[in-house]
Image (cartoon, rainbow, N blue to C red; front, top):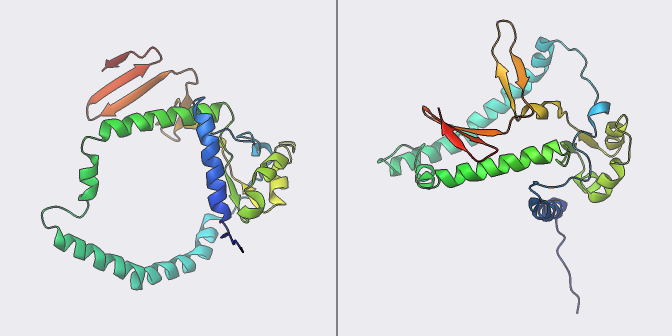
Length: 223
């Protein structure tokens, strides 16, 4: 019997591998455990040269105008027509509410809890260097693979970006990831400042005028 199997897209296989890795890592409080250290490419990341902003905008402006006009004539009109039809059928409510409003009833506490847990896992994965580096893959079948990750992690950080470049993969800047947690922006006269408190161990929940702070001792207080 001739058994023919349909080819599975590479993106599907890659997602399945990431999901399996995430399940294994979730037991330890991680989102996943990347083969490549999070900041492996930072030292060799190329720097942008200084270019005039007006020159940059002028070279992209014609293309942007063309895309805008095409959207107005084609996709924009179709979407607007569908929006008007939906609004006409639901005169009892605004088009910006509907199903979205109903889905939020009695689920805000659950969503807030899931958000807090996911954020904590993300923070731990980032701090321990297990967060997958941001890489733009031009040919995912070639570079978005375990074999590529095993190879590129052996390269010295001072040259790792160029190694990925040879495989049509482009690591992106992740220098600002350290400011995602335990940091805040302080308004200043000329330029704002980013202040970090790496030892902070609290979670602040704010709703309207209510502020609830959870510390590492699971103690909550309002202020």
